[in-house]
Image (cartoon, rainbow, N blue to C red; front, side):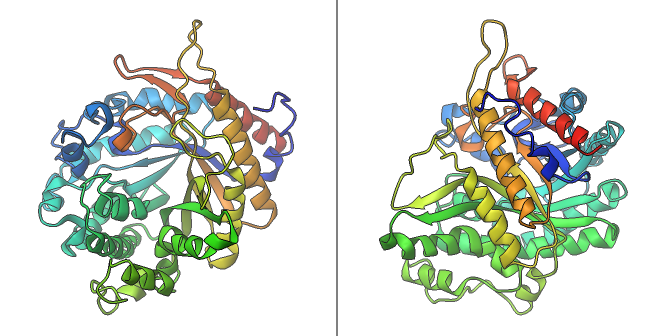
Length: 449
């Protein structure tokens, strides 16, 4: 952490007056109330209740109890001066069976949440899918079944019909790479499948469902902005001998989703690598039907960018690491934003997730002095400011996360929140980083006057 409070004085001035500063969460990670008011079971309910899948046997049954404490959480955002909040909707809370009859009690919750945010002067960003597929659909094949594509579009239509008059920003999917590959190739996330061929089919169906969901949203709310959030890692080769491996990693890790979205199709070098590795019987995807790629390439209004770290091929790197083990590499954010802006015709970008896990506990005085998180955010905000000066059309920045929460397969062992949560009592406390973020936003607002 830089001890000089004036050291980043010039950074706030780089961000325009309409820039959206906010925080982000996802439904399964914070809501709890897993079986209340008609909510159905999700694949993460099933996965987290399966012994050995989640560290410590943790589940999202209660999580941060946001379902009951959402007013308190809006007040925390308001106290921090946030202008926007990115949250996800739990598909099984609205459609317990994935499709069919709408559970109005579930949609009523999000209706109240949106109204509460707007009353507090906070712009809602809705993510339709943050990994919690209804278990009923999984039992029919889940994302390997093409019918799930149409069920997702049906769900998107229903949500947009209800909330489209007030929600201006919509994200179809969060991190389809994680869904496809961590969930269906490595089996580390729900639904816990280890099948390389299935993972590629899932990836394609996610992109196709994104396109159909965009059409559904726009049919109900033609004035809104619709995009998708992809997770990226800045890929570098540690030595010249590792360049080919880094190229292959980039095709799989970064270009596999952005290229087809931009009308370029799936990376040909990636397909060759998949064939070489035995993931495909032939260097082509059997799940692609006529017209799919045209639909997938429908224009997006913005791209959500999730960035945490880089991947150094052939080396470990010498920088600081967060408590989850990820290298702190803000330069990767600067390079990534420039690459995306100058390589792809994307009209606007939002950093939809960026943050760090540091497990600092309250001190004797009750304060949580997470100075490493402050340093992390300082350096990444500065990297984003540099990208803006280079002409990147960056429109907003969402820090992950508002609250310490259920961190997927890590359970409650990792804390990404600006707000500390006592999971036994649900007490919330602003960390030092939350106050720093509040003061940063105040300096930015003062610089715009």
